[in-house]
Image (cartoon, rainbow, N blue to C red; front, side, top):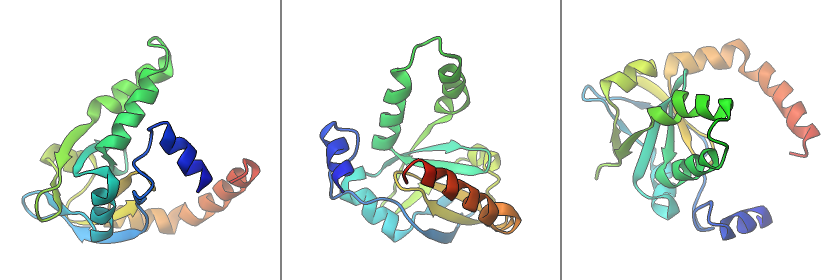
Length: 166
């Protein structure tokens, strides 16, 4: 965990006790658009991340960032030259879509009808831990992803990451 301590000293991550989001969890979105966050993820949020989140449509579902992680991403993009075309595109296509949500006392977030539609989320979903954030996918879309190429693409990605020392 040496890398973690050095990055945490710069203030870009929560305290070392903060947990990462990992694992897959099946949940449902209720008729009012509320999604219960898995208890392990709620524990991680309580252990350094906080109860404020930012949701963003990602083309496959929704990205869910703890506010601290989102602010870190915003700061990294803000540090880029203002006229950089990639930075501008990312601001327009991703950062501008961020929507603040807060965990309610039952550990749920409210997802607006617009964002449920953008993410293709109806009822049954899979919540996927992605270390400093998590994603919400429609359960059927996730099953197609796993069946239609998730494993093959993963093997290629592992090989590329191995060449980078991961």
